[in-house]
Image (cartoon, rainbow, N blue to C red; front, side, top):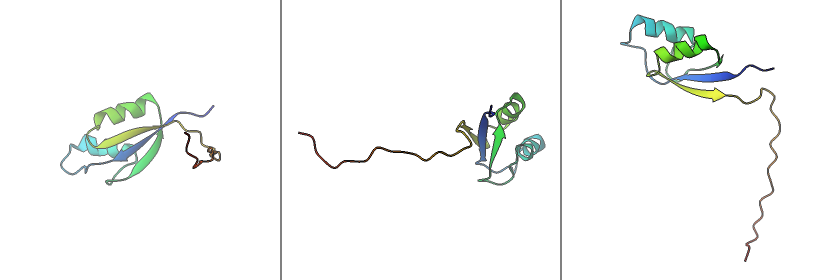
Length: 81
């Protein structure tokens, strides 16, 4: 079974922050503004995220790793009366 993942993106600089915050960003695989990393959704990762929420954004990546072709319904241009 595939493990759930989360995507973490750095949105603010670590300049002027505490050394522990900078270390936490490095442990999350971040270092520059705009860097993104996909990590497993585990308690230790969630704990690191809780220490630097003002510097990052988090989004859940629960989509399966295999990409399936998307099938959409054909669009019709007929107006219903």
